[in-house]
Amino acid sequence: MLTLPLMEDKEGVLVEGIVGDFRFVACDITSMIDRVSVERGLSPLAGCALGRVISGAVMLLRLLTKGYARLLLEVYGGGPLGKVVAEAFPDGSVRGMVANRSLELPLNVLGKFAVGEAVGNEGFIRVRREFLRGGVYESKVALVSGEIGDDIAHYLFASEQRKTGVLVGVLAKPSGIVGAGGVIVEPLPGVKDDSLKLLETNLSGISVSRIISEKGLEKLLQRVFSNVGDIEVTHETTLFFKCRCSRERLKKHLVLLSTEQLDYVTTEKGEIEAVCYFCGKNYRFKREELRKNG
Ligand SMILES: [Zn+2]
Image (tube, rainbow, N blue to C red; front, side, top):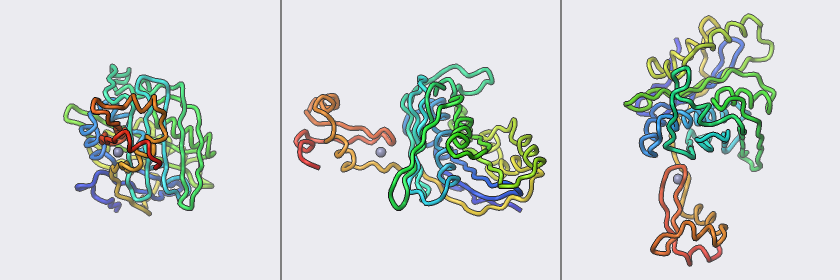
């Protein structure tokens, strides 16, 4: 019987494994997105978009070849939501931001949050990978729908020549975020046609966030791999939201800004104020501090 790590007081979990002719990565980040949405004052729509992009980032980090120190996933589609960014690290830490945190739009025709419309589809999905031993690999492909899941699948095909099924979703209720996560399934070489067809049928019409919300990640995997084979979990990671900003890092950025941009963030007291987009933390610097080197 499949036994996944219990969520308990964790903010999120990621599991990776094999089922028959497929490998998979899946995550449940419900608690993380619920907390971050409250702390950062995200509208349900913004929370949904951020949850999808963070799910994508943590899964891509595990799915793509190992040995990355950091993976950044950026989605920009020209819509009213602006840029959505997530960064995932091998220790399970993750951070993310959405440009227009308070955006609200009417529900779409399916009665769901209009993530595709909010993100827009006139832009790109960019993935930047930093290797543990140094060096960077970056690639960017056009968005197909702005719904994130389709866009990640398209990215994997266009940039990596990998065929996958990608589902990501977030379920918001008046009480908060009640389900958030996703799954990526990739066929192994030599997969049988019958298995592929069965998997496609299983994946179609699944609401990832609803299943996670009601029954958890274990049930989600059982649904995805119904009649496909036994689920073998080969790796698991505890996920948590943690910002890596620091006074020193922000100072370096500010020193590089022009005088004009510095004025823009000058407070009444003549101090320079900088806010971290990821966690909302406020840093203040004296003008003289920023003129010095480093
Ligand atoms: Zn921060």
